[in-house]
Length: 385
Image 1 (cartoon, rainbow, N blue to C red):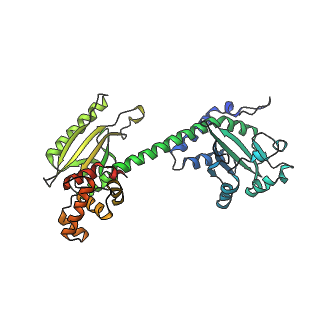
Image 2: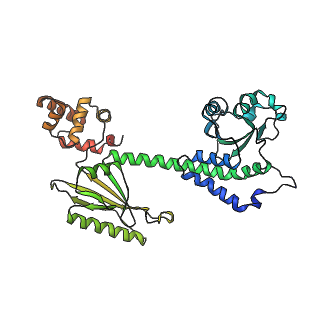
Image 3: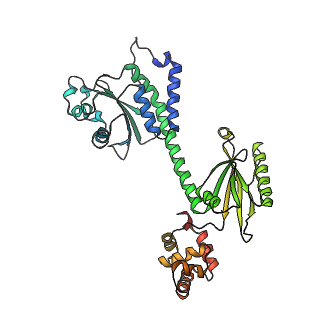
């Protein structure tokens, strides 16, 4: 949609290309804010000196529309807009001769007495409402509405033109935001799954420094002294294991820096309790032009300590293997490394009672040894739900 300009009209973009470019940049910078939609609409209300900016989305299945976000409206009126008015397009309910522009509803002499105006614009202290369609995917219509207060009058022709011109960038902004939110949701699921599997994840930068770590890694670091974070780097207590670990990290970082193929490497780190060890898999994170900064993740450490408890729930184990709540509890205690005596003490049961439940667990899971119960639980989907 482009508004025709009279011969005396001056294109604001041509006159101020630098200012326009800066404003477009400000739009995309809103993507990095905690609430991108709020930041975008706040930016638009300030730029066009409006009282309100609203985004509505209409799908082919729902013609009433859904409010994505409203900016610039106080609490009570905001609720009124969401519940009563902003979920439909006002222009659908007005006679053609009552609309000065095909995308604008204003409080002119005739419209001032319009019931829709009484319900909406006057309630919010607005004089005019300018609507513009934002480019969107097939089957979806997104409308941006700019509300101008009584003191502001109409949306000026230059502002209309600028809004029309910006619609493409706002559409791209919404596409990028949707993709970013999708990636964030996927990452959250992946991280939660890794955590619930008791797998510790530590990310290292191109210099070997720690960039981030997950909750399981925090638990591992707080429960033992064999591996720690010291001065921003992974520190291994056992000297022989430390030498091997640092050699692997150095070799993989050097290969990655020159673009050479880097295959994953696995190693075991000795623990103070020599009866057990910590397994580590090191994987290189592919480098891209936009991840060449020193602080960007370069290596991922996947660490598994057999002493860490599993996070499978009794309900999930019960549903997966057809166990009773007590049987599921006993099976989980076995998977955490407890002996029959430990389970007796933990649940306050007699030896014969625990063994009766164990025989039932063996039968339902189709095994004949405690070790196989542990293996089935650890290999099942119970740890990722």
